[in-house]
Image (cartoon, rainbow, N blue to C red; front, side, top):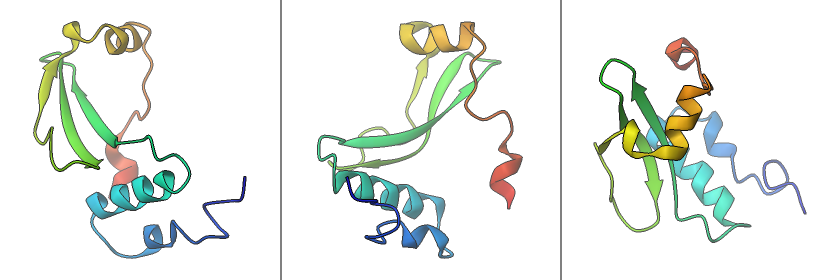
Length: 98
């Protein structure tokens, strides 16, 4: 498969000064060039004090289905398993302050 990240320049907008929401949309668009079955990508946050998952940001093909959505982690077995295993994708939001 051709390199969608460099040769097509599909992700060139990631290097521009733009809101994080636009960057997520750019990534989603680039993925859809080769994987048109991806309807939505999102970033969720886990509040360990309340055990609630909260939609942070997303890109969806069909509008805005889950803005400001929250869900108890106990009702999401596959995600509960990740928390129980101590798996974290990002340990600190400080990398976002660049």
